[in-house]
Image: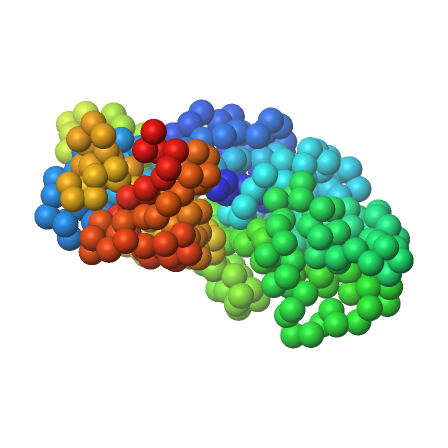
Length: 403
């Protein structure tokens, strides 16, 4: 399962975002460094189920299907907040950056209201420019990755020029701990001919350019512009959109989403994450304070379209990491597993995943003994190189699986 890291400056609402997304407990406080150990939890993304297309009633195991929408589990990790010069070990910098290694993409929670200073301390709303928060996080991650490469750069140069080793292999070996693979490195090295010079001629600026691009390719990011319930946020959201046109900027109120999720859990309202509204179903059980709060949240949703939390999660997984849903089955004619469950599972895989890749993802033995697969929608036999499409229903036929 791919992992999205909830990142950002300390005390901007990351833990509130995490709790709103997962309903997992996380310590929330208006002081820096409330989060020390990373919080882990499971959120969900919405995808179209194929049950209506196939005319079947499904009974999922690893997800839920509500009115033809599958809620697919995804993993989030909320790491310690970042402060300037984290790459030098300041604050919890070393721990923060080490926790980032496992993340495939980032949801950068930014205080769009400008109500926390560079170190995460509360300040007058509007006093801090959130544009600087985005730039500083980019800088810290870039410097961290630069230091990792620079430390062994002489060895890399020697390996390429004297030992005739492959540059891609050497770079991937050095960056493997950051979940950066050869395909990411090849993509960057081929971009715009920027890295066509011999490796011994690379300057520090060239290495810096490389790590900046490799971060964008290997660990994409969306920006959750949090605290849009505060008056100073609206202008800053527009500033963020103007300054960072290559990022998706999502207006967000993690606090509002958490309130809605908890009220729905108690049965006070009818609400699903990402909805453009909610319905109060137990008005008589609400306190005046709760009624006032829900009215404010309703106004916020009418203005921004949603609380933004679900949109941010789906943006990183579906748009940036380019995940697509596929439905593995064991009986291609009935769309079931061996127990008779209809469309039992849905798996998110990156675009470009092949039938054989899927077999390995399901079980190593299935991949090792792969013979062919069947597209259950068409009934056609497909080979190991078939590239999966969104909504494919696939049966894997494996020598090991037939024993």
